[in-house]
Amino acid sequence: MGLLENVEAELSAAIGAAVGDEGHHDPLLRRSDFADLQANFALAMARRLGTQPRELAAKVVGRLEGSKLVRDLEVSGPGFVNLSLTDAGLVAEIADALRSGAPFDLAAEGDRDVVVVDYSAPNVAKQMHVGHLRSTIIGDVLCRVLSHLGHRVVRRNHIGDWGTPFGMLIGQLSAEGLGPDAQLDIADLTDLYQRARTRFDEDPAFTEEARGWVVKLQAGDPTARALWQALVTQSARYFNEVYDLLDVLLTDDDIRGESSYDSDLDDVVEELDAAGLLVEHDGALCMFLDGFTNRDGEPLPLIVRKSDGGYGYAATDLAAIRRRIRVEGATRILYVVGLPQNLHLSMIFAAAGAAGWVTPEHRVEHVAFGSVLGDDGKILRTRAGAPVRLVELLHAAIDRADHEVRIRHDDWDAQRRAPVARAVGIGAVKFADLLNDRRNDYRFDLDRMVATVGATGPYLQYARARISSILERARSEGMVADSAVAPDVAFGNDSERALAIELAHARRTLLDVAQTLEPHHLCRTLLDVAGAFSSFYENSPVLKAEPPVRELRFALCRTTEMVLESGLDLLGIRSPDEI
Image (cartoon, rainbow, N blue to C red; front, top):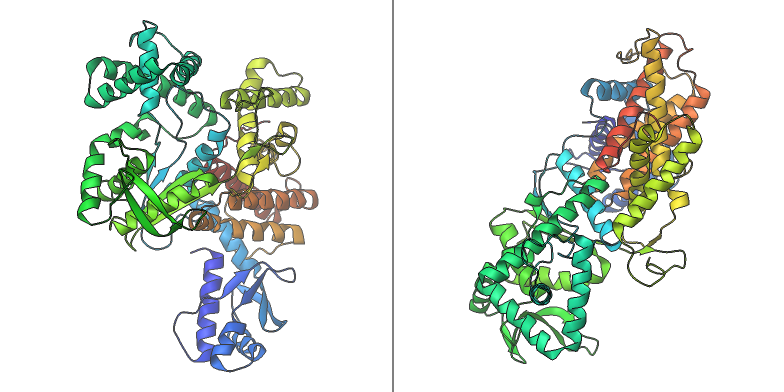
């Protein structure tokens, strides 16, 4: 356990002793403007015991006298306990982080989960646009954090590769005499889709032909399957280029197209029908779930099989959740999908619960997120009104970062600038997105994103690079910058102590992210640590200090470097040694 967990345990034991009950008591700890921490427990407990909150808080303070972890205890307000962490406890926390090389808690609370994370989800034969950015990077961070905490994470990229659009595409390929070996890049495929869409909407004969190709595709027709496979393969190659540029961990092995659930759909219908959960409605087989109504207050159907015998998104999503639990062994499933899909996913979760697939032992959660906006406060689009292509946006960020790097380092050639510009540009976009509460919309502003001051990714990258430079200089001058800190050393000023406190808080951040599924907590923690380090560096000379103060400051520098480097890595952001 880390320092704060040990403090919580001491508080819990003191509360139990004060009330004559050795059972478990969870004090609510939070940061305080008056002390390092404030414990809130007395108000609720005093009501249950019929005593005064301040009286109870005073008893707990008395039980904690002589603690090696907390000091300066006092009762404040209606019954809060203010307390400061001891220097010895904070120094031991720093020493433990240095010894383990792990600045964040490595142990997840409770049992390990098998977590299936559904994210990114682009469409075959279409370029990814800015709308795919949030799902891809939020899902990537959650996968990294949950894996770091010891859960078994199964990544799932649920791509759109089935249904009517592919009848249109195959029909258009056939009409233009293009076979499976045609050399078409993603831009060609996007143009092909647009031509097919126009013909589908305007030419009844082509509409009928496209639907016929869908039937052939689903029946396993060799020609249809070969053309479809060519579309999927080329699209996957393009997806991987985008994922590589974004530094996310998705691979071909993580792809599960809608087509992969096709063989399960009839079984899903049979199982739901046998359980008495399907109702025929206007020729379709539907589920009517408690609590879901339309605008007129009428029951809202979840269409499992359409009136023409075909299947839509609902059936595929039901087949997916069923397989994830039964075959992949998921105990927790995360759907990193935009807010507008909340109703649909809520109905899918309810349907899976009614079918008995999702039980109280499972957690199925919609990790909802808002939109990326332009300067006008509307969803970010091109001047022509089309969605902004993700690759173009990312390259624009890299170009902007390259400009900033060139200003700071006019002696660097293009080859030296390139990896730094990429790390800064991509990191700037990702951090600006992840810093926001994911449920909120945010405005895309490249100038603000790539700045090395303020709450930005480059600010953190620069802070980490500066610390690395300090430590490297110390090593080059024969100083031992990685040695263990003396256990009895005391902090010499408030900035040292403030940084140590931020580092102690940082160790438990990942548990918060894993529970809330909100990456912005990690972003805020890294900014708090970097801000505390900046104040520390201004007030606490490192290289000129004398032992043992110098070793303590080296330890604070090294631990801060570890927190920033590890934290950025968990966000999927590179941290170059020079910036």
